[in-house]
Amino acid sequence: MAEAEFHWTVPADHPAFAGHFPGRPIVPGVVLLDCAIRFAEEMLGRPGLNWQVGNAKFFSPVGPEETLTFSLAQKPSGAIAFTVRGAGREVAAGSLTPPAP
Image (cartoon, rainbow, N blue to C red; front, side, top):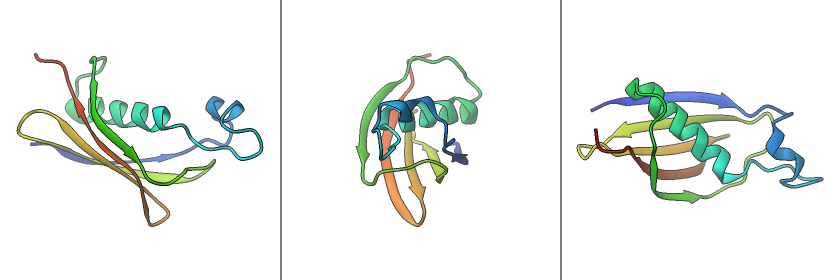
């Protein structure tokens, strides 16, 4: 089963900050999910899949220029478990399910 770790620094000018939230920019959860999906596809070498989010929990807000670590591990079922950490804290966790081959 595959395992991998990826790092991403949130760009200060990320377009999601325009409306989320004025005066206190916070990375939307969907952006973290998008990153997890991109990293899962990179880990598996299979881009462009139609993923399903099995579950996702968001524990701590993320701001501009924060560096995050995405840890991914493929389960025997083919699902990808992921955790996201930043600045010594857990930010998010969940699982992704790829489509059947």
